[in-house]
Length: 370
Image 1: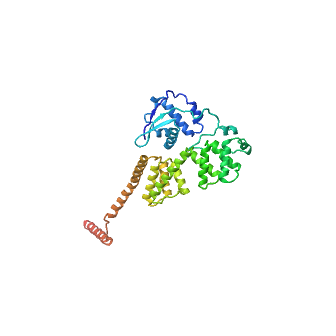
Image 2: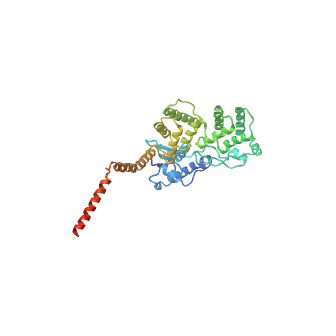
Image 3: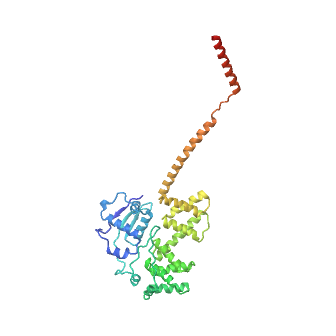
């Protein structure tokens, strides 16, 4: 656990939240990310009251989140330029500095799509399992006609019809509207998602929308981040295949779903995932994604989210095993001693003769005495 050091930066007052933050950064941010930012803003306003053991784990406990969720929030605001992060030699976040909030546009307006439909902004976009993706609004044919003059929508409809070679249905147009309004993705990014999905053989708007939702869950909202994510995923698969003794290849759907769960839902780093793969080979001598998943699920359920906590979990398991085995050893020892005890043997005929002889002697003595 690494203690955090807060830096006021160039700010002098944290009593109020910047209007720029509220107007331009908050609407499309994950609600949990906003909570973390406001919490840090409150803490840095009164540094004397900041807990001496402040850490990402403590913040996670306070908001009933995972430590990895807090890390994602900090990285998100760092990418947006609102925070600067510093790291220690173990690559843990050790410092957070607030940066001036710059205005992204000349004026803030309700997005054209939401305005045209007469709707309010959608709920914040979640990034990881446990958060709720904005619900999808079903637009009627009349509502869809209300977007007739929207250039972004017209452009995307034209592209989709060109790529797919068909006229779009109202359900198809609903998918595009959801990506634009519900997920707050810009036209260029939606176009990138379309091109990527179609090149991979996913030639329906429903599958394109599904990929867009997955990007939203992971906090990816632009083509550059999506490309970087793809590079990282290729690298982790290459490392996994190497450990499992498999040839490098394009991952199949089941393998992708496992890695998505490990990195997205569980929030594990590549280092921890590869540790689970190494242990899989040690125990099974087979490259099994399923067995590796059982290891990682156990770590996640026990909140062992770092190599240090995994080592502590291993030690606790070893101690519990030793305690459970000890009574069995004592029982076996007692059984062994019982078996080695020398058993007595008796000649019952001889004993009977001796008893009769003793009885006759006593009777004879008694008569002599009389």
